[in-house]
Image (cartoon, rainbow, N blue to C red):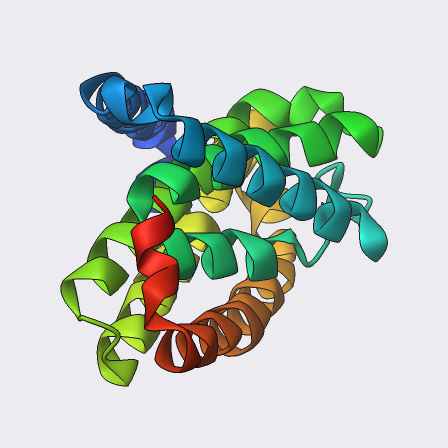
Length: 200
């Protein structure tokens, strides 16, 4: 029996275009939220924290030109705490800046979209749960899965299926750390200080 991931190879370009369209559509549809001073300020702070977390610990992956980092911890933290609009900006812009600052600028456009979509999904699903632990975990697991699949598809297109597989365990590590640390910490803060949701 063949490798089921090989079926993705002919569609990688179209999947990437679909992900990009989803992200851009969400940002455009919510452009008014980014005109509010609180949202702009918190989005900027969270994006800066994502950039720092992305470059705090880095382990390069030679086969893909990517690297292990813990920026997803802050992407999920921002999204769970402040919702999808902040999650979209902090995840997309903060992570893309992390790539640029860290010397991986070639990955920034893909990171902008993949991590931005991760932030949207985590923020949206978590906000539906009214700070329910199971919804927070579901949100971060779905966001992490989207991040893993997004990079996997991008890497199939850019560096080939064999090299893309090498980075899957790296991205799983990032996602699991984001779920446990980022999602868990944001959940605890929201339980202690529920008024934090009123900031945006």
